Length: 157
Image (spheres, rainbow, N blue to C red):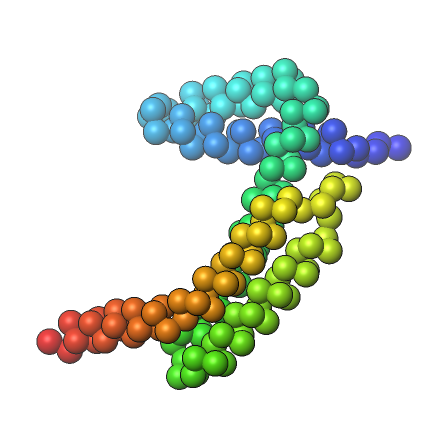
């Protein structure tokens, strides 16, 4: 039976990624979609043919770390929007950021990617971001309130 190994899966993913990116770029230069698709198909085959698996696994690990950053950034932005658009007092907002930072820190610290732990720079980034949100809480709230008041004043004119 056919077994999908990590090497085949990574090669397929890199092929699809290279095909998509090169087609998007080449379609800007060539008016004919057939030419752009042919060249991007050739580039994708060459990419997976000549790049060794060790380099491909490094790329996949890098994309995994990027995914972790994005998956932790989206909830942060959603929380930022809802916390500062509400009428919560400063203590509750600071408590929320400390709680959010510690939950994010411990959930990311416990997860592993390909038998490796998350690099410490991400964890330090979460600690620093949480500390900055607690320290500059009132300043951020004032800036967001000012921007909202200015936009309301512009639309009411």
